[in-house]
Amino acid sequence: MFEEVNEAYQQIYGENHPSTINSLINLATVHKDLQEFDIAITHYEKAIEGRRATEGENSVNYAMVKAMAAGAYRELGNLKTSEEYLKDAYMKIAMEHGEENMAASAILNSMGLLYKR
Image (cartoon, rainbow, N blue to C red):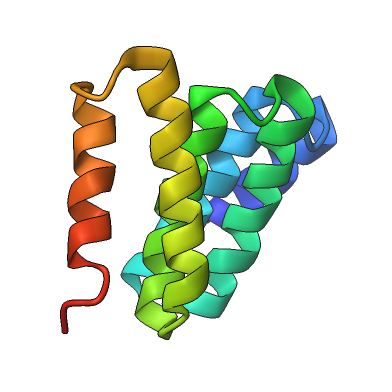
């Protein structure tokens, strides 16, 4: 169902419209929850590119999608990429909203747990 919704958004709005990007994020999250991490990463990466194209690399929305993708990379065992994405996301959110921001704190927590297994 989410695939059809995303396709409809792409046809109606184009691939970089916020609604299309949000549907990609939802689709990625569904696949992540189903433990289909390769598929999830593909959708997260498309969403990251969409955020980069529409909002730039310094936007909080861009950073949040990178943080979500980091979780899928972690589950695949790609800890290096996960760490890079989390660091990047943290820096962008902390610069924009301060280190005490809830999202920045959650990302720090994820970084702390990254290598724990």
